[in-house]
Image (cartoon, rainbow, N blue to C red; front, side, top):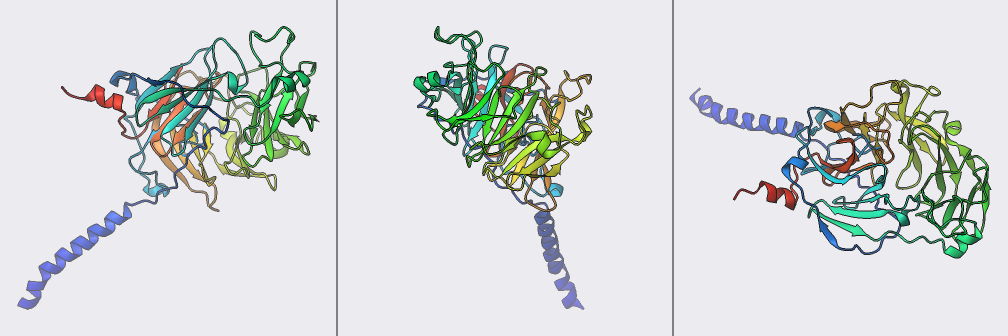
Length: 444
């Protein structure tokens, strides 16, 4: 009997350690692969002078008593974050990031300075973005102001814009202005407007010449050959997305309503196929503001948010879908909707649920709200959804560029327009100190 008494306490201690180990392992979660945005494929030249962006604690502190969604980035859609550890994929075990967050303003926006491009460069610590220039209103990237911000060093540097591959001789041959500008600042022989949209993945272009009285849209090569007149667009497209494999183009024609209200067309780059997007999918996108469909990085699929009810004002009728570009069949993958982006491996989408302008024009839409960033796995038969961050402050806006943004899982940061009404910046969702922050918080 004494022998068992002597063994009882050591056994009890062993059992306690085993029990603690089991509970600890249950709290572990499986990290999802890093989802990084493919950098701008348009050529950019060497950066010019390096500019230090001053920041203070006051400018970086986010008011999170009130709450972005940017195209599948926040585990459902939208931009940025700073992470000491990677996001977790098992929803029931996920560690959800919550305030306090820190906000770094990069640019003040206005009617003359609009955001035109946003992307995190791999591995996700540098943000490249482009703004319109007040002196030149142009649809071409060569006329935008380009910047790169390094979140690790705090350096902001100006980039030389990409050079158009369409020569002045070809522009003259196709009856194109050098740029689309408002007011028009072009040579004397250019008395009207034209549109030129160049592919970043092939040698193809979309254009509408000056002689087009009905908004004729043409597809061709950058050298002016192999021209095909498109029949489906109802007017000249203002935006074009090109799939990474060079097979598809998504053309977007602006409807004279809200800035982001578009009619989309899916076109093969050789001109052999074209269709109005909603007619193909059976889902209506008309009342969405700025939530453009997006090609997956591998070029095989197209994600979009659409309604099962024609011209619905009810946001509950809108869902997140993925179109298979081989079968041209769609599958609903989530009820979350807002700014979104693909993960770089094309296996999932980041969605900023609630990060968009309301489809109902009579709904109160000017107040700040709180939104949630999701990751949606599109590969599994039973789709997995995971919350990355909650209580994200977001101001809805219908202005151009407000639907652009990007989430970086490498630093858990969201680049977006939405922290306030007229600025573009980075919302750091996890603790992360740039050199400027360290200086402002250093004690003497």
